[in-house]
Amino acid sequence: MIRVQALSKNFSNIQAVDQVSFDARRGEVLGFLGPNGAGKSTTMKMLTCFIPPSSGTADICGFSILENPLQARSQIGYLPESAPSYDEMLVGEFLRFVGEVRGYSGKELHRRVSIVIEMTALGDVKDQMIETLSKGFRQRTSLAQALIHDPPVLILDEPTDGLDPNQKHEVRTLIQNMSEERTILISTHILEEVEAVCTRAMIISAGKVVGYGTPDELMSQSIYRNSVTVSVNGANPKKLLEQFDELDFIYSVERVPDRRNGIVTMRLYPKEKESIALPLEKFIFSKKIPIENFNVNRGRLDEVFRELTLNQLTK
Amino acid sequence: MKGFYPIFKRELLAYFRSPVAYVFIIIFLAANAGCTFFLGNFYNSQQASLEIFFLFHPWLYLFLIPAVGMRLWAEERRTGTGELLLTFPVRLTTTVFAKFFAAWLFIGISLLLTFPMILTVNYLGSPDNGPIITGYLGSFLMAGSYLAIASFTSALTKNQVISFILSVNICLVLVLLGWGVLSESLNAIFPVWISDLVSQFSFTTHFDAIRRGVVDLRDLIYFVSIIVIVLMLNVVVLESHKAS
Image (cartoon, rainbow over all chains, first blue to last red):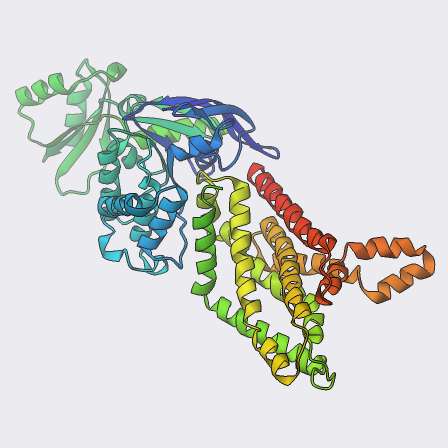
């Protein structure tokens, strides 16, 4: 559905996007991750044919963004960063306008507007002026606008930016519900979002792709991968540390600060990031250690993100 | 031309949604009346014609039309709606013309609201209504040329004030090229054909002919070609802005 080949963009002497290539198929939610100014929005602007690439190309459902920009655009629903819309219009009127520009009229237009209003739960504000809407409703209006032509490809630039946790959850649920028959590209710098909605993620830093894979694959690069955090009630920290350190499947042990009274928390790192949950559990059981919590870490995306993006910058 | 009508309609309605439209119309009408009756001494001229009324149009438009056109593209850039508008599956040329025609029609409506002037001269005397009709036509065409320039300068910047000042200056040059004082001083130094050539580029030269009731195809072509050429430049500017 989306095929990107060596897409690059330079603004005078700044390399904003450098040889980005990827494929995204139907049903995939691809997350774009990266620090501010990494080139996420620029890449999206090139895919929506808002700005032309300096070199490289991309196909949207088989239409080249260079040769068939109008056909490519008609395959895309686009939510630009900060969700711009015409403030002086009513929500329903704005959606009708976008539908008309996309070539619908009469009953078909009416039907499509009703569907997206329903999908994004805008029914209560459809006769309200966009200017008077809260941030959450504005974002949803903009999302509704992107859905009006039922596009096979959705490009969403920071769709949950500035929303409160409930609104974020709503937007994420909406994205998940829509993902089955579509290809969705979302950019974000909220890492939990990637775990929550993305089937695949791409980390970009200074215009280059520095990490690509499923969220789990990316997390497996973390030093915390398969480490276990154990909290013990009323234990002697020193003795506990020694006990764990002696185990042959443990690479190292560190004490983690814990504010709870009388509870000692340790983090145990395995050798070669192997799973140690089972042998450790057996050991704790046999020694009758009074544990409060037992957590296996899948790895931390924020740590991988920092590692990859900071490395890139110092290079 | 797909997408022309909805974009045109939205733009036109946007004028009437903001108080600016009404302020503009009031100022437009007041300025027209002020110029005609006070500066132009309409009553003392003892003529049942709108010559004096049209005489001031090149000067009035110098400030009023850039005020209408300055927001056309600058506003889209400032609020980010341009990114939405320019990623619809619509040709950029269509979008530029749709926005232009909406603003032009708005100015046309303001111009039509000066109709009490026609009633006044017809009540006071029996004027030749031919030059009045051609005067309105010429004035409308000339307004379109000013507006195309304002639309073009609006695409250059996201700052409406800069856009306004730029278009006022460009339009001022095009008005002054046909100014009698300039022609005379050119005649003192150069052969006459030079000043004739220079004044051919001016709004006033072509408008003067039309408002006197002489509709020459060349004058019409002048205004239409200014509009088309400047709007094509407008498209080029928007394209290159997207590239950088």
